[in-house]
Image 1 (cartoon, rainbow, N blue to C red):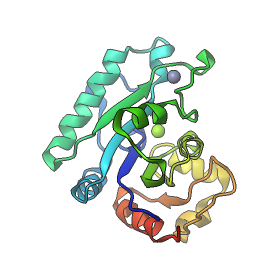
Image 2 (cartoon, rainbow, N blue to C red):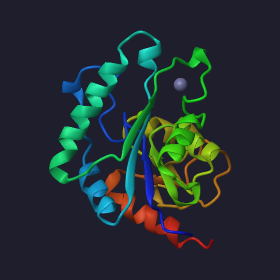
Image 3 (cartoon, rainbow, N blue to C red):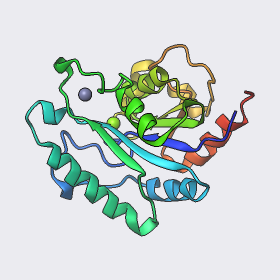
Length: 202
Ligand SMILES: [Mg+2]
Ligand SMILES: [Zn+2]
């Protein structure tokens, strides 16, 4: 496999604590090991992108400005580690608006690809929900990892993935788009998971 140079990250439950329809920047809390892992990957030349469904906007619970304020609070918390997102995109729509950008649809990938010249074969997605995995599959990305934070544990239980987590099994071609290749307990395992992916035969 070619070297992974772009990492797409879900926000809520993956990079920061999952708070129900987070609106208040003071509620932004970076999850353990995230800053360290992202700093290490960024130091090797990996670019980081935030890719988030924010249907609370479409549902009228908060505004796009609230989303941006939370993203700024996140950036401020990561700043001491030197971690910077190259770009952040979010879908503001409610499910019934039938947009093309709400994960698992691949619209946000196409936006990032057009803006930054990303290549699916050198890009990995990390998220805590089946929609994040299916988004990666729909975009044709090289990798998709589930993290057991946020809704990750519920996703593991729903699909019976406890064994995959415990045995650290890497599944190159999962049986369904919603399923991950690899499950991370937390972000401390991320650099190693990317190394496993890169070691796969092309
Ligand atoms: Mg999430
Ligand atoms: Zn959308």
